[in-house]
Length: 348
Image 1 (tube, helix red, strand yellow):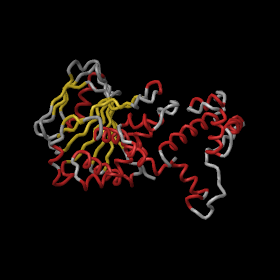
Image 2 (spheres, helix red, strand yellow; image 1 turned 90 degrees about the vertical axis):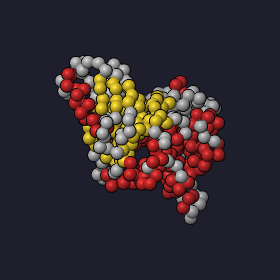
Image 3 (cartoon, one colour; image 1 turned 30 degrees about the vertical axis):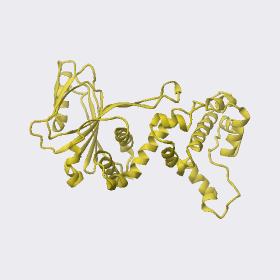
Image 4 (cartoon, rainbow, N blue to C red; image 1 turned 45 degrees about the vertical axis):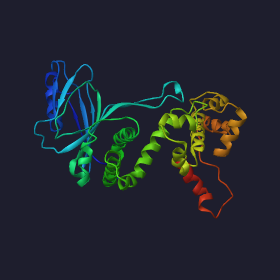
């Protein structure tokens, strides 16, 4: 497997007085930047750039509030591109594990044309940028000009922001042979969200569903220790209907099954860790199983052995794999075979 390459530009090794000018030259094709203050204090910045077919993704780490900057499009910019930016792009974990505390995304999503007048003052310390050539959408290119500007973080904006964050996280592991497919999926999502037609939405539906599912899974993982967390709270946090939520999780055995499975998997991991001395019953309580006998039954049904056996195996240095128990039923049915069970467990 050959991974896609990236370009990394960093100013930290340069003399402080030269850092900002070096960074400004690096980003010049995307616009002109002036520092509203002295350059003597330095400008420690790092840019990572990935090529994604006709698209380019860039992640920037910048000094932030101590270094306000004026950003302007060049008067005559040779790049006829759009720039989709997620500024201060970072995730904050849910606070106190409360089910009504979403895995918050701090950031402002903004779409601008590099060929149009633009100016802003910014102190952002974290910026994700996706550069999109104007000819990517053919005759529908003009539709993106009508949505230029700040994009609401809810709905479409949330999907696009999640996709940018997912791209940044996964780009270092993507096989170079898969870049074309990733670019096609990204193009379809951009077209469906920013210049929607029925055909474009249908083409991007798989990407939209996958992006939404990934966001929901992250919210679930951040709330596993909330005993009352379930579909109702999840619908409220991610702003989806119950019917949409159930459709997304139908291939995974249902949303309730998925939440319960994840709680048991995390409990299994703790019990298998010989460094963890939390009593078995307390492990169950941590993940919402308040009845010790109920926890033991659910654990055995999921893995084929009791929680105490998982703890004993971990202490002995031979942790057990959290595979589903093999069943003697449905031996001639692929869905009911041990292999089918194992494959379903990967998605569950």
